[in-house]
Length: 484
Image (cartoon, rainbow, N blue to C red):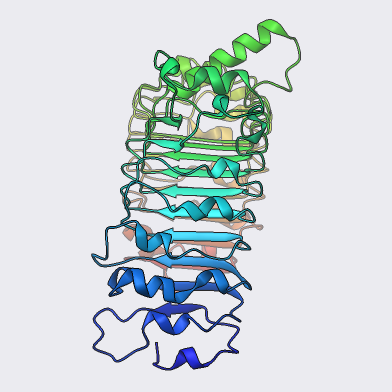
């Protein structure tokens, strides 16, 4: 930053202040922010780890006096000062709405001023840090978005057990809509337990009996974190679990069974309004657990199942998922054929299958998916796309996008392609054994885009004007041929 910037006392916009890493450039030091109290909007301060005499400099910045700032981003880098006092001295004004702290290598205690920022709507904390539990973010009345990433030593989401507070659980994150927790490998629970709670292995009892915790939560992402319970309530719209335990799903299942036995009303069931579920690399998740969980998700529209080695999907009951419109199956090695239960998915419009090394056939289910509009299948080494088997495509007049990638056993296209009269996009990627296109490609009058990549034999035959198959595709508006 240019030296003397602190003299611009009427300055209203300064999107970023970058601290000179070694002082050799003769730039402004952090104290020049002291008099810039008319700054508005967002201020990002970078390289805070390189500030010399940090305690003195941070006090000189006087962020508290900058009443017009609405967004603050504090970015550490370098070794910096490992004491927590410097961050304590960066107290901002109470009118902040978003606060982002990145790379602070602080002590085990968060600064006390966080509880004074009662207007905060969005908080993002990115590690690494040394503190083991977060402050009482739950007491911030306006907080709607909370992102916790790379806090490798944090043990609890909140330092207080909500049962120990005056009042009920309505105060526990009352307006929170979005919660993202990622790479917190030592997180034990949502709050620090009282001594009498030691026998309670997880937070199931507290979360499972009060519908006032996280009453507005609509998006929950938990990744690489050993939490064993979740705030699974009817307002939740999107759930993403990556590299976690299967215990939260088991807990949800038990909560559903308990509530169903007490009442015939379903709107209050956990996850009853879930619209999207992404499950990836979930430990000990088997077909039975997933099946029992999914049968309660009657409103689910999007489902992704990825990297779950113990699943085969064959014996699952898919009938309750009648509203499902998008299904992604990725790296499920035990999948040999499409589960027969998929025939109940009359609303399915998008189907993606990737890296299913054991998949051999799309039968007999595929013919029932008559609403399918987009079909993508990639990296399935054993899949057969023979003419005898794939004639089901004759009924697929609704299909408008087809993507085939890395299917070694795909050697030629049978004549079924002519029946895809509404097909608009066709992608043929890395099909080394595919040698030619069918003669009736010209009947695909709706086809607008054809992409051929890493398919050397076909690429040569489809060269513009000179290839042996060019006359079959000359009517297509966009033809892309790449051999990288």
